[in-house]
Amino acid sequence: MRCALTLLTLALLPLTSFAENQEITIMAGNTPALKLEIPKDAKATTKGAKTSFLLKDAWVYLWFVPTAKTIAEAVPQTAAIIKSEFTDFAVSDTKHLAVAGHEADHLFGKGAEADDGDPGAAEVVIFTVGQQVFIACVHGEKDEAAKRSPSMMALLKTAKPAGK
Image (cartoon, rainbow, N blue to C red; front, side):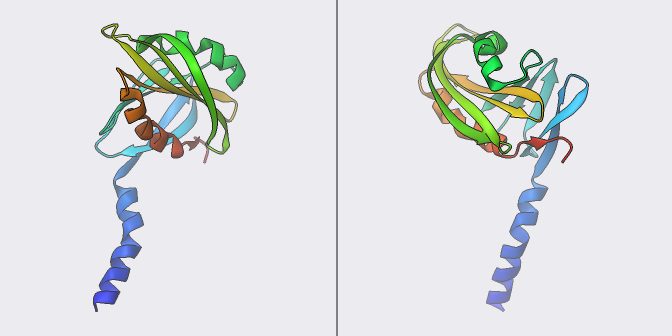
């Protein structure tokens, strides 16, 4: 009996995890472009091309970049795009990863928080979904960006085209 209950519990775990998430659709202009999963208790707010996610451990910001068709075109625009949250972003390192099955750039850099001007760090991921380019960002003072990065990466692991 104990074995049967354990197996039943293990079988229901994926259903429990799924029930605790909500799917968010991100628009690229007037077109649904990107789907992400966030926890049920998280909040997503969209204003213009920026969507702000309030997760348990971090704020994660996501922008649709209508002026870029590739990651390479978006990189020089990054500081201007994220300036509502983080100013004077200067890239110090770049790594490569995959988001939604496609290559992406993970940028690391210093600058200042837009709300109070305190010096800090930001991590930015630039990625494509279909023909659209997006920029995700976390930031904070001292090592706060690195502490918030796992929340951003977990969010981006759920990324998929809106048509799927």
